[in-house]
Image 1: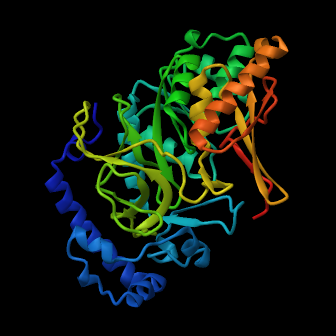
Image 2 (image 1 turned 90 degrees about the vertical axis):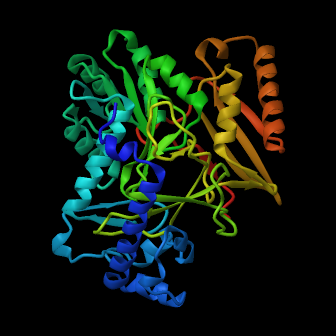
Length: 432
């Protein structure tokens, strides 16, 4: 089922022609309207007419989150303030907030790509969509909201928090589609179990889950515990929030709406463009936005592009689930460690809950990694010897994957802090 079949099944050559035209237009727009970006191009000795083909994009400089912070709040806006009809921003908890402005046309495009994403996930006019992403400056809630309304679905704008009420509304209102972070989906399932509610007694069919990295093993847990098909959605506030890409029913990667977002994969260290199929950092150019376009924005998300045919019939390029970040990678005793690697090991064992936390400390000059892992109440009351065996088993598996030794601590169910948004997986006490 398609929302915009013409675009979603467009031949690759025709798509490239559309992308090249839009790229030329957006470069000209930014050069003329944004002094910061004009100066950036001039530093490289570039004029807009130097960008004639898609291959020419490699001549353009990258943009980063720091550029947004340096131009806080409106320095990257490419239209007069009177044409901006909505502003979103990051929380700013890790630095100055990053601000994005949208024109009316930008919001129309956002709704369009969200409608495509929701349709690909199985949402239709008959659906009841419960949006449990936060509303406000965060892009998740409103992004899903307007896309679902464009589809014609019945929107239940619950926002985040108050889990027991979320579940009551889910039952009473007949929610068929749940939109939230994957970690919160698991928390909902856990709470439903505590409330004695069988997910099969609800009308839930599909989850549209994103805003944090998650593995296929975590998908299996969510699908089993909530009795739904869990689809991955991707976006980032610096580009347009959710709707940059979304999985279809095949669950074999996320189709990028590449008529609006031109993707590249680069080596995060050298900036060199990598071929399809190679793992690297995703770089996105918004080739149709007018309020605040971003050219060659380094997302820091690690993924792979795949242009092989998809069973759903869409020709839009697919990106793999995000495999980690190029900038939140932990370096422990000289070894690169991604939280997703540890999650994959834990869920692969099948003997623990999907809730865990990584604590990094420095003792003397030596970094240490402790992995806190929740186990079920039944197992926690089990004999000490069995628990010790499980600890050793996890340690062995982690050492095999990470190539460093990690201390494992098994903790009782519900010991680790739950999140109604993005789960806090890492506590780094090293202060480096």
